Image 1 (spheres, rainbow, N blue to C red):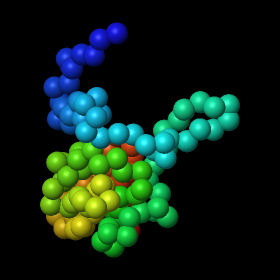
Image 2: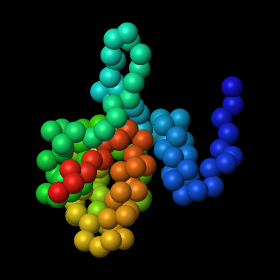
Image 3: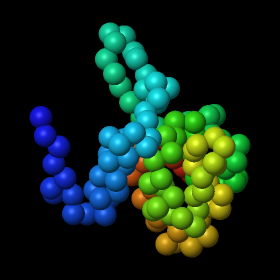
Image 4: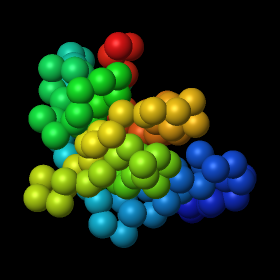
Amino acid sequence: MGFSLRGFNDLRGQRLVRVARRLISGQIELRPEHFSLPFPFTLRKNTMADVANKYAENVAGKFYVDDQCIDCDLCRETAPANFKRNDDGGHSYVYKQPETPEEEALCKEAMEGCPVEAIGSDGA
């Protein structure tokens, strides 16, 4: 079975390819808590960020990162003015809420592109 990167010409596809390469190379890993195992034991990815599990470092506001984060760097590349890395914990967090429509659009893009859906928006 082969792995082809053809057809990933859009920006989101390129970011997903970078995440896949980091997973394959072992730079990041998926941990068991990123998945749930419901009966009858089919592997299913958690489908949304949970405000109850958001990291304390997130500043108050609409966007947040929860404990599903795998430190893939996609959000920090997409919206560097709003996301930072917690080096001790190995995860991202929102250090500044968007202040412009452009920043808001980039945060939404980061949320939609997050491979484990660890970025949430509470709509506030």
